[in-house]
Image (tube, one colour):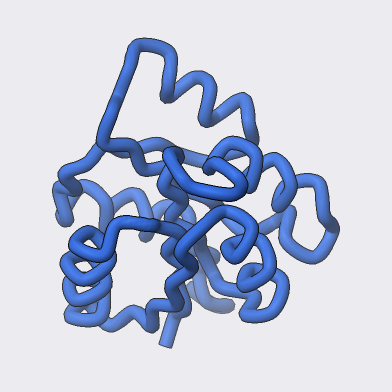
Length: 125
């Protein structure tokens, strides 16, 4: 089962998206702030990270920069998620090292397409 780390501090968002991702066959590990997200990424080595940008302790931009600067986590794809999409946020997230950007509320079909595009394909596919 493919493991996704979801870094999000809003319990309603965690409940909704975790349930939907599990329904689509993903294992989901949750971190409630950016610092915990960095620690869990190192510990769990997920296939992909969904990173909220507005987080306590370390925000999503800081957490992503840290992940992309560490050899153990730099190759893990990160999709930034933001409810407060402002002009320039997508560019700022990509500049911080995110591999893609999406807005909340999440369009699950669009997000699943982005996840599939970033996940490593199995050998022989």
